[in-house]
Length: 159
Image 1 (spheres, rainbow, N blue to C red):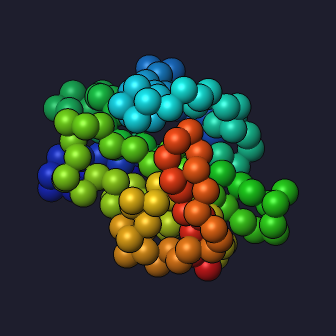
Image 2: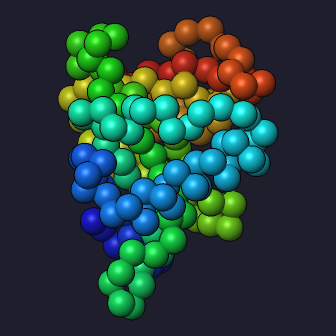
Image 3: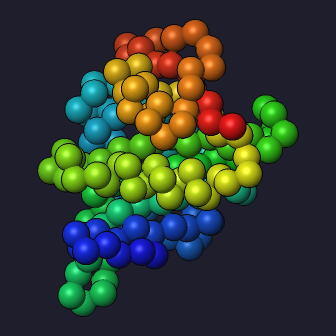
């Protein structure tokens, strides 16, 4: 857990069992609000991969004076993709609540995710309009653009 002067707290759980149920509900709700409702993509966000060994969840909350968990305002998921390629990790489900965008929360979460993947190659299926943003974190296109749920995506890697 890390707090910055802006009052945003980052959390990490290396196992889903380590996330309080209300917090995981907030993570899932945020992902559905943005990916399913806002972006109008009908798909099963809770795909079972959050339960896999090696899945890491990172999320951001505003700090509270009581120290209790608050509203989830950003999240990212890291997966172990060793079955695809030895040592490979993937970062996905990068999302920030509409009310909290423009505050650098996604950048903080992505930097924390990259740090958690240190020593491993990392794959991202970036929404193509964000490929330049991901390039700023050291990711480079690694394949042809493809369309998923009506949204162009670019596979990108960071070695």
